[in-house]
Length: 116
Image (tube, rainbow, N blue to C red; front, side, top):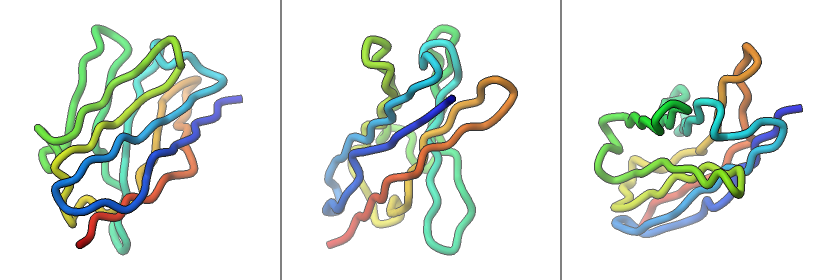
């Protein structure tokens, strides 16, 4: 059974930072592509960042490029999203995702609120 559990969300001032964590079970994160998505109120789910299993290649949405960094700690079987220089428009529920065994798997989400 694949399970992804996000944590680390919360409230932060504009310009601040948060680090989100995605703890995985049922898969080894080093062997599968792992992604972060987000969904703001009234909007569809948006791909934010991906880290691939081969060569740790990463990809980012233009809106977060240069501010967010996706990484993984294989010893802890955990994927992270370091979020710096946060903006109002980054407010959303953030979800961890993987594509494995021919299916998409999602975490329950963690809320990030950027406000003054």
